[in-house]
Image (cartoon, rainbow, N blue to C red; front, side, top):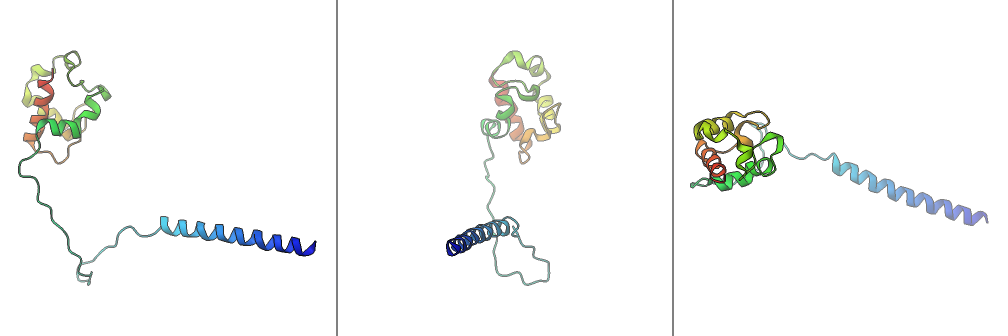
Length: 136
C-alpha cells in the first residue's frame, strides 16, 4: 500500500512538471522579441530589403470604394450615406464633386480624414466619390 501511494505521488509529480514545462515554453514564446533594432554604425548582418515598385496605373474609383469606403457606406455606418441609395445622400450631391472630395480628404462627422484610404492620391479619392455618385 505504501508503495502504491509513493508511485502515485511520483506519477502526479511528473504530470505536473510536464504541464509546468509546457506553460513555461508558452510564456517564453509570448514574450520573445518580435523584431531587432540595428543602430547605425553596428554590423547588422547582410540582410537585404526588397523594394516593390508602386503600381503606375493607380486604382480606379471602384477599387478604392471596395477597399476603403464600402465598410461604412454599404450599411450607412456612423451616418454615412448608403451606396446606391439616393434618399440617404440627401442634398450632398448638390455640393459638387470638389466639395465632396474635400470632405473625404479632411474627414467629416464620423468619417476619418482620407476616408480610410491613407495612401490614396487626390485623383483616386475623386474617382471613388464619382463612383458613389454614379450609383445614385
